[in-house]
Length: 102
Figure 1 (cartoon, rainbow, N blue to C red):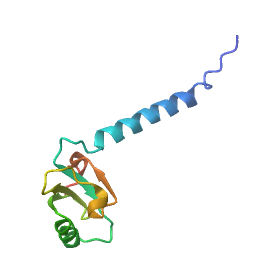
Figure 2 (tube, rainbow, N blue to C red; figure 1 turned 45 degrees about the horizontal axis):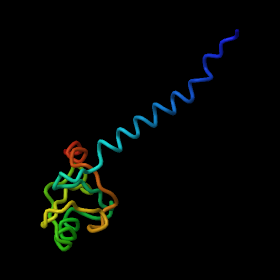
Figure 3 (cartoon, helix red, strand yellow; figure 1 turned 60 degrees about the horizontal axis):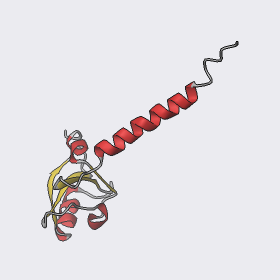
């Protein structure tokens, strides 16, 4: 019997990569029990523009990340903020935004 040890490496690597990606996505998505949600805004917006835009939409910025286009946003009414309500590109867990401080 001839052994072909490399034939199973590609499915194994694909399975491992999918597992790691799934772990990252599930770990860094915002959950409903969090009041604040990390948001990534367009790179063209300054911190002042983000503050005024979020304030005009009924929210507030709890803190900024190390990069000027990342912020933790809290709704004044206590609901979970959504990216499309504030003009953000996408949302993240506040844990990942806190890792981006200066």
